[in-house]
Length: 409
Image (cartoon, rainbow, N blue to C red; front, top):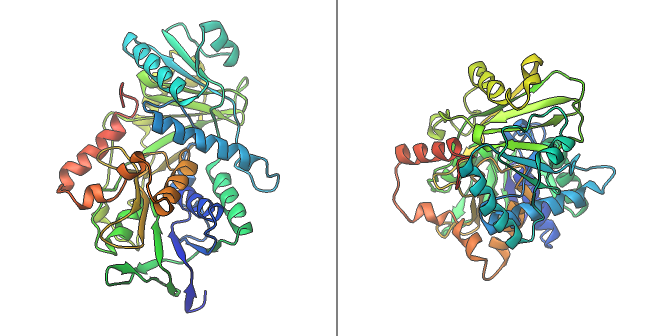
């Protein structure tokens, strides 16, 4: 990098969200975009730890349509033989073990119908045909979505990059942001360890450091990193990459094939969060060790449905700090306090699966004269124009994680 660079828009953060934002901006005609990433490569932090599940069945029409847009984008990106997200549209099974969950599934199907998403209830035999070796005896209802699937987060990010570069987007890695100068309430550039970048707009897609980047322009936003982890077993006969994704929300579990192994994760009832004020912009979030009691709990909860899990050794453990917000909604759009400072953070564990939809919403927030009510509701102003305290905000953000699969979430 030279001492002075220039771009119309600087995107801070080279994860799935930042690279999706760059891709969608370029698709919208804003090609003078520079993505700045402090790590040696893109997708090196939180994105690299994601499980890559993509589900479209949600509790609101807006969220369903966001997920549907992401799936459409992944299908399109998959057509590129040279750089694609390794998207596998294997479908998904959502299993209810209680009467209350059955009721929730019926409501979710009604929402899916309203959004135009193909979702159906199937019987035990049909489910067993789709996933041999899985025990569905306890299932009271099974919801099947044929267009769901999974992808590889690193490959997805690289696909966004490849498409963006073809449209003129530039990328700077090994480049750490240090300051964001403003003049008369407007962004005028980005100061990095490699020099100054003059720009009119900054998009904050910095993941676990999005809090710190917002603070550089005087914004205090409750973006709370919460630990999430999952494990991948050793290979086993009968496990193949064409098996559907499965969610068993009554046990807070999700699972999918990983080539010929099994990936198992879940949502902890007592989550571990970290205060973003406790580590600086220049340092990574606190280190994480595998929490074996939690991981063993996931396996134990899965055993009634898939007894074989107790026979499979663990090959690897993935863990990271996805960020959560107190109200469980993304933070997207320009701050009314600092013109040219745009948020794309607080993804509530949807940074990879929802990345395409988030990118689209950022473009809508930036370019549309009248963004939708939903996109307007995601504005950072909801936190900068109201009073809140960190103790409560952190507790609420952690609760969003802990209740991720709760009925009505």
